[in-house]
Image (cartoon, helix red, strand yellow):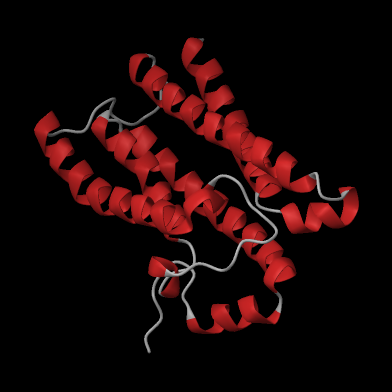
Length: 195
């Protein structure tokens, strides 16, 4: 029973993550409706989205303790240290990309500001380095927990993150207009464009 409740909570929290992140990434659009307080509300929504990611991590750990009775093995057929190596091969570059994106975006990572200028650094080559790095971390957690189910379940976050990035881009087009549209033509969303 705990396993089924945990999965239901995991699915609900994943949907809530999408909802709150999309709201947090839409301050310019919300400002048109509710005024300047939209930026503070977007910050609040970003905090909620971040907290939901910790809940998802807790759900993953709970799943490890109480797996669903599904026709998948509870654990991978190899030693845990092999999972650690696989997780490191995926997780180290993903975390590096996430951290570089956070450093180059600065405060805008959590708190969008109307007067913020467009990014430099890694953002000259990639529009969503934080999302690209972060989305793989759910898979890494599944691998570290030796769970085939969680590793496969982590695929759900790829379309969720794509939707989150799409919503963010629509808002950035409102904030920056033609400059952002031009930036999109020359910069890859999830993979650098060839020159």
